[in-house]
Image (cartoon, rainbow, N blue to C red):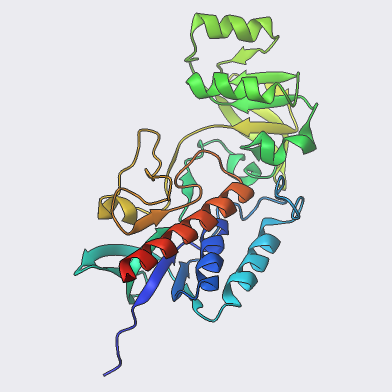
Amino acid sequence: MEKETIQEVIIIGGSYAGLSAAMTLGRAGRKVLVVDSGKPCNAQTPHAHNFLTQDGETPAAIAEKGWADALKYPTVTHLNDFVTAAVKVNGYFELKTATGKSLKAKKLLFATGVKDLMPEIKGFAECWGISVIHCPYCHGYEVAGQKTALLANGEIAFHFIQVLSQWSKDLVLYTNGPVHLSEEQLLQLKNHDIPVNEVPLKELSQENGQLKSLLLEDGQEHFFKVMYGKFGFEQHSSVPESLGCEINEQGYLVIDDKKETSISGVYAAGDNTTMARSVSMAVASGTLSGVSINSALISESW
């Protein structure tokens, strides 16, 4: 009978946070398995920015380099699969995958990211990550000074329009329905010459993901080449929650300063833990989680 393989660490998610952790652990000689289904959330984003030495590179190229860096360490391996369940039994985590595989590890790291819940507006999905973007620190420089739309509502809309004012003075807020802002906030927007439009959006006119105009339900057409969007999301993987990991009011996994969740031995890094979604921050969080996991394994061996 073949002896059961027990990994020291299984990393679920092979994007920037997961690969950064894998490299850190591989350099410590840890036996690591990275389980990834090969479907990154930024697949159609043309360029990544604000990442030192990789500014303007494609996300796919950065990921390819990341896999090469992580897998050059002989104790790091890769499984193209999707983790569907996990339980803790006798001090180990037992995992099941979509293809029916059973895996076992001492520690888990979830670098699974989040899934954006995009509004059901025709053309929106085609533009997402290309001309409808989420972060001015990631993409704002390239569209600075342009007439810019923001699709958002409530407190996040007010905060985000303030941030965007650093990149453009020609802003319009679209709430896609009744506005949820205070009178004071509306007055501040008016004082900064930022119009608020409550008419629902019907369609984004676009070509190959490049925004041309916003078509509103009342027949108006407003011309923009760039729009930011702020809307809901959900955890890409439900497995951490099934293990009992705490999720905060914003929908992110709760972690401590060592990237450990509320369940001992389960760690999380990257977009599933924070609203600060950028390649550089994901890489940094992955490195810290790798260091923390290795330190925990060392402590347990003494």
